[in-house]
Image 1 (cartoon, rainbow, N blue to C red):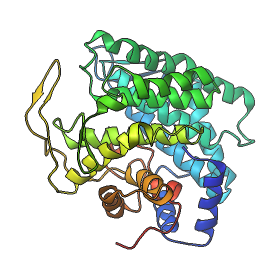
Image 2: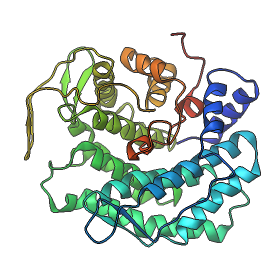
Image 3: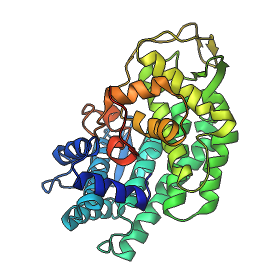
Length: 363
């Protein structure tokens, strides 16, 4: 998600106590996951969606990911080796323990969301001298043998369901995981497969399906808009992560198909700010949604700084609603700052710290 140049910028701005970086840094340092008291809780079998045999326990994984990511950022910015050691201990605990991800069909949400987040957390400390090569290789093996096969299987046959059955975020989470794993394990073919699916896939997470209807004025209807806004903003966050990872590899998915993702993100942002947006009746094999859903309306997820800084600051494009959302949620926190349940851990967070390129405009 970030380059060494990004980490250098974060370190410099925090040392200068410059806002908004220092404000986001303070959020990270006070988050309970960035703590010497944190102890990893690895599970041999992770269950998401009770299947009648095992109880759900996936909270152990998403909490440990939040801790590993926060510790890694702490080390990158402060230079505190004890923070990096904590991140290493968490990742090593999981790579030496985890054997399976199971449950209901929700297991594919776990393979996607937590696969991408694990790989990104590991990438933050990849060059830390204290992570032994044999431990790093064992972690890569876990990603390649447990997470990647599930990502690939889901995108290939969608759990034996019709191609339009699963909502966009299911595809997007598994695309994100496949892409992150491809980057972290240096498997170009895996990365290319993720990028190809995002651009040309048949499921709802492919670009032209997730933003399936374009309107005048730079808006594009999001595939889950008639479902609820929590899942719409989740999808925007996942697509943003995919585009950011590809950007750091030299590929511009942000601008693909005449900035199609930007139009979908602006649509979601505008509606979640309280404004009306155009809506076309959405129909798939399972549902017909006559109107846009107000359920979960609000821009609360920590997903907007990434989009604001790419489209507005870097590309100088007009994105008024993304800009307003970024202003509302700044500074963005991390795992656990947006509720104790899984939705509060669907993003790695800390976007104000990691993506801010220049001083944002005053509110």
